[in-house]
Image (tube, rainbow, N blue to C red; front, side, top):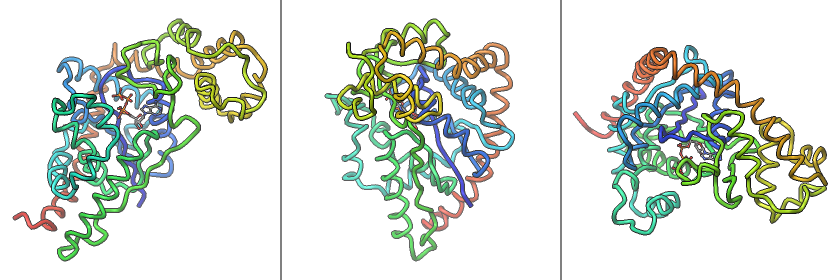
Length: 335
Ligand code: AQP
């Protein structure tokens, strides 16, 4: 069977990159795959989170999933910490993964910063927990943004090594090697303040990202202030090369409209940003406001519904993961 697993961290500031690079693609897989979409709260605490905010942010991600169009009756929406198999399997996989593999992870290097000795051990072994998230369900496909590609490769290596290490007791082909699904024209949305950096939740500047909490005015303001150059838009897609800010805005327009970048350039090539930016703002508001409006409604008025979705999702996720983990225990030799 084809089983999809993916997750988003409840670390606040859920943004357009998370939506276009991940959540929107989750929605599109529902007709063809069995899907599990997780709010990865255990990943979130690899960097300290205020407990009250963590709870609110967990509901926010769940609300985004539902508002974006994931059907919680047909598919599974849950938070990671409610299903014990994630942590249990992560321990075993920590013993399968090699330190040398983790040392190559660029996200750790970026997030740990200069003083690496002060980073949490959890941040370091984050990719192993991510492998456990996926393998706990023997998921075959993982829709993610481009920045997660390296972690997915590690998950495949971990699965392969587990299967080999435990071949004699039933490991052979036990874990499928999960395939990344890096889909659509917006697999890497860039910061609105710096077109060479990815749009991110932790950027100190609120102007760097459009969040799923922004109203129409905030969206318009942030796009108006987005960093570009003084030239008008080029007449060809090739003309976007070396113009990171312009390229990013054209990419966002393409992703939101369903047009290709070439089609966006055909429409706006030669025009000034004074024309293009308001058009982009209008499009962004049109596409995002139904989702952000529904999120806000749920978070303000229907928290018990969100909690019920998460509770039912956790039960169903556990029903899939528990028997798989029982097999893992046997394969490893735990009695
Ligand atoms: N800029 C982006 N463009 C496209 N996809 C993106 N994703 C994140 N940023 C972009 C994708 O969103 C999913 C959820 O991400 P996450 O919350 O699990 O982790 P993250 O990558 O750490 O998120 P941020 O926003 O980038 O946070 P910080 O500030 O901590 O670095 C993933 O599928 C991711 O690829």
